[in-house]
Image (cartoon, rainbow, N blue to C red; front, side):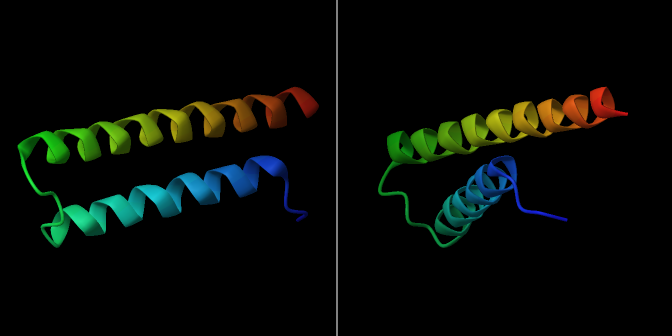
Length: 64
């Protein structure tokens, strides 16, 4: 299967989300405000991931 632009974006979202999660696990947040900011970024990345994967699924179903 050929790699699409969607695949690249999804991979980047997953890598960034995992990177932030690992930073949180290791205690990288200096304070609660930074912790909340990082959690918000994870939430935003997760929403973008869900939106893009839903879009890909719909586009694949339209092709059938």
